[in-house]
Length: 329
Image (cartoon, rainbow, N blue to C red; front, top):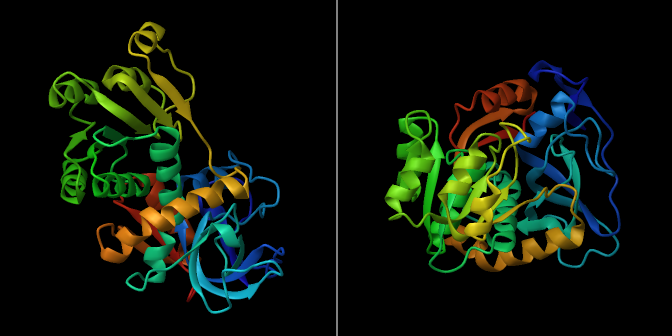
């Protein structure tokens, strides 16, 4: 099969299309003929040598989400058949013509979605559900602030939370991105290059603040996050692009009874991801079928153009997801 491999740690040009053996699959797994794969920030970190894959994942083939057709099934697989169209969350190896995935981490592709659209779903939807709804426990009537509102995670969080009746605020890096986020459903998008979100949030919430913040920035955003949270608010970290080491005003944490938490999904056990998949199928998949939630695709690249796809992601010029097409690598 053809696969995009990391030839050595470094810049986008270390990504090369190469021949690799088809992966094997365990009894509880299926083998998928990959038609499209999503590009995500962890792929960038892995390419640079800063995010070693967990045990069992291909060491030189990145890719955490795929869409395609089941071509073989393991001995204990019960709910999938050869020929089924699925998208799947995987621990690596998604940048390839074939990839194995646990049956429990596969979800059916709605008839109204293309392979490229379906490939944009697993990493972002699993991440948003796990962190916003499970870990942070966003409840009816509560508000959400999402940093990076125009990213793949951001556009997914906006749509999921608004479809379930929540008021969503976001930060984004340009007026165009802010306008897009508001058109997608955000009640207010804050241009972080011209406004300070920690000053705007109290103004637009009547001084209350927001109940949950989903943050992939970290670093110097932390002080503003704590200021922006309501009493009993929850801050959930899923990345720290601006750095890991921060100063925290513990008096504010105690006075407002805040929860600061975070998670990394990739290394979690199959059972944990299977529980998320079950909730997604029941709650979110009907909203995809109805069109209340729609994948947002910025660009689709041929697999051989993976370096260009990574350059685009690192530029942060995109709105929504970046996809690799493996139908014609």
